[in-house]
Length: 205
Image (cartoon, rainbow, N blue to C red):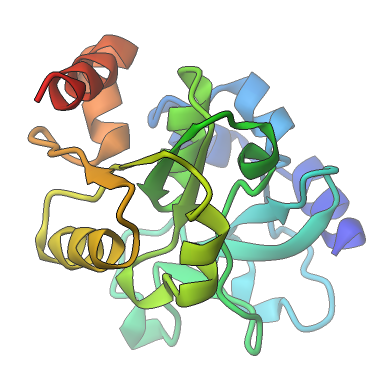
């Protein structure tokens, strides 16, 4: 996985960098999280050609696995892949586990890798789950030691299911209601302050 991460990171395209910048993810974050593009696929990765490569990094920075995000706006399923793609047989993981080692009493839980990068960018220790179907008991146990888990579910039906699942499994979880859109869309609309204000509103209840 290290070889793949290095190759794909070096192959980041201008279009992919623009896609990320439009979502608030700049050069610093691209370098920190070793984001790249599958321009020359390694064996077994041919189906991910042209996709954004998102390495899942361990707390010491080495790559545990990679997920892939299709950058094309088309019918993904009709073309035999999803918008986001996991390597077959790879177990679902939390993204950003370094924050579990760095956080104090509180941690943030986002929905999706790019949202987690935004939460981390504005100064919060955060992890993310790829969605409601990929949040499992072992992930809950990884977060059980925190006094507060601030959860940022997407403002849609899937996000509501995710919030219900997280709050059922974690007594310390507090979901934060988003209105404008997901974490990234909220950040794009109002900057870091929009997210800070939502957190303070929840804390004041």
